[in-house]
Image (cartoon, rainbow, N blue to C red):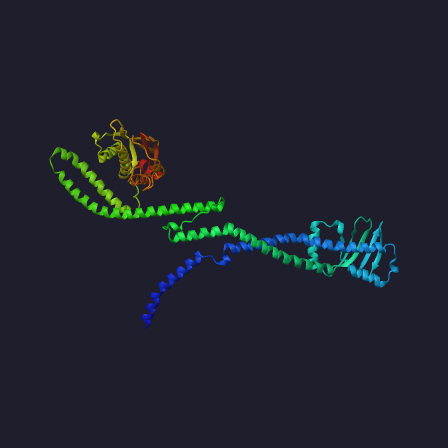
Length: 507
């Protein structure tokens, strides 16, 4: 029973792992509300507006403090105008206390022509903690003093003095800062709540505007990418771009183009994979048939007829190449093209073999011209270079075969030149030239065909083999009456140690 339960638990483990993986995948594709762009935008907007309000609050609270002190000094100046012509002793104590209580001061004095006169006094404090000249306070000093009063004040005695209005007299006021600090705290509290309301209101407006302008389109693109990743072959999953001229509109259009291109490429890859599977199956049977043909060709070599003896070696070489190509196609279904096995070759002889394989009949009106110098040598893989030239030549012959006029010149010429360590082979024909569509997709399989019903695989394979040699295949010219392809192959770089070993003579 324990074994059965253990086995059942082990059997359920993969399912649980799969469910956990699916849940983790969904969690990676879904964004929680607290981590979404909308939430971040809202919080950042509130934070930034509050920071801006703090920058506004500092000069505001400093100005509030100065205004509060100026109001008290102005009130003291108004009282001083009444008292300046009277002796302080003429005023009853109760009246003096009421005047000072209304201002919240301990004493009021006036300075005229260098003489200071004490007008009203309740009780003179033993010491003054801070002397404030309202006319000499700068902006930074005002902010620093305001913060000092706000956070450390409440038990200090202030001496405030300065001129009021157009008066030549200077008025002085001795006042505690307790009521000042209480007023500043109340003002700060009101500013904080008002700033918070402004922040929320501004954040809501900014959030609504940016959400409609940016967040929603970005979410739509994100959802489209996730939907496209789940079914890339469904045309309905391609994003529909909006008619916008900004960056998001450009991003939507580029995403739509990229998804369309990717969908087309995936369809072509699937087509190529299906075709490769079919070709591999057909090629497997064809290889068996070619093997039988090889056995028959071996018997032809025993025939004493001179004409048979002349053509039998060519037939054997053609069958050998066909078998090698069949095996190469089967290998291509599993891997890429093999790395070139490079040797020094006489190019003219290789071009002669290409001409023999094409089987061009001189009576058909197509002329094959081998313009390669007999002594020209090239460093390349013979079989792969043979395939490159065969594909290019066969395409040229097929293009020229469409022109049936008796006066039309139909010539295929292969020439070669060398520039230092680089060999350049030119394949030129007098055909009608490549159409525009074939030029735009020159080396793309299934899209670069120059004729109806073609696959374009010949140029694609030739291009791949040329690149495997470290070279290039390019279209030099294509007009009505002349098309030239150039195959450029550099020699293999010489390794220093191998060159030294080859040059070293025995002692």
